[in-house]
Image (cartoon, rainbow, N blue to C red; front, side, top):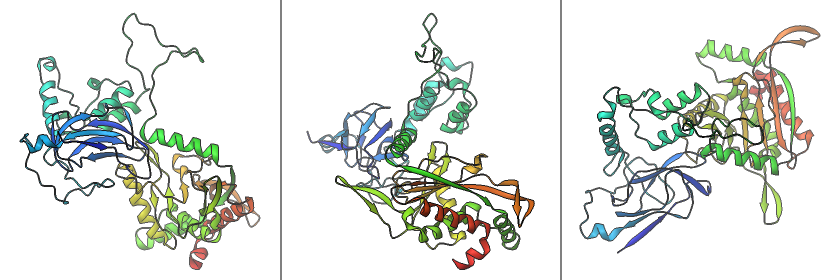
Length: 434
């Protein structure tokens, strides 16, 4: 026997663990090089793991829902079985394919021979169309991830309308159903005692484990609060001139950069004048040191169906507001569409969080570890404001800067924040000087 053991690879940014969402093969299945064998969810995204070996599956090292450690066995493949005539499909192993490359492994064509999902779908369809479903249409579910998501939310699949082909229940269907009401645990069997929380004395309605993005976000926020001595400064900003500039550009050219893109332009210029806020504190053995960068990687906080993500626009120094607008929209769309890989979600040096889109004025933001600062933008709304000694209605917003007090003192943070605020209040003149 020629047994080859495939260890779970590093899926990006040194992530040390991943949740096994679903196996795409079973013990005894023939697999070929680059065939997807499993879906795993990391802190960054859900990815398919391709096999680097060809042969017959001998062992699956883990069950769906398990948390696996990078560098530990994922799957064992008996390559000798393929050599002695085990039924393996005739497959090409060229580099042409999707381009979804994991570190150290090749590419795969999605939907190519060897994928088990089509067969799984046919199998489930046959099951669901049996005698038990004579009275109602089958509620088809292919993805174990969808089943697990419904289970975690305490939802019955029979009560969910599938929006996919032939009534296929998709992840978005489960998430929409979950958003329509509280997350409840499955009904307790008749006669069983309800679980009561000892601290509150209330009956427990449901439990949802932290996994994937939410688990990673919780760990990062906890570490940020524990390790970064942060301070916060804020300022009210009269954004009337900026909003007027956008209206003029839109009337003239038919389109204008977003307010976020303009703020990003002012931020990059401000970081050029106050570079300390673009540094980070790193550990060099037992000592700490300030690391200065020769560029700016701008993180943009984006709310997605999988939780809060921070896609990164790289090397933004010197970009115009229009160029920033295009690149910000592109990475935000990737994140919201679930297509942002580890490369897009790592390596930021400064983050902007536009929580004003949620209708709030300010926030005590948590710095995106291990950056040194985060700028928050509140909603823009009409407020009374004094201009040249007279009271008038202006379009106001609040900027909030959370910063690592180890990289700079309050004077530097205030100077940066004031620069961005002044740029928003006099955008035409500032842009002309940039």
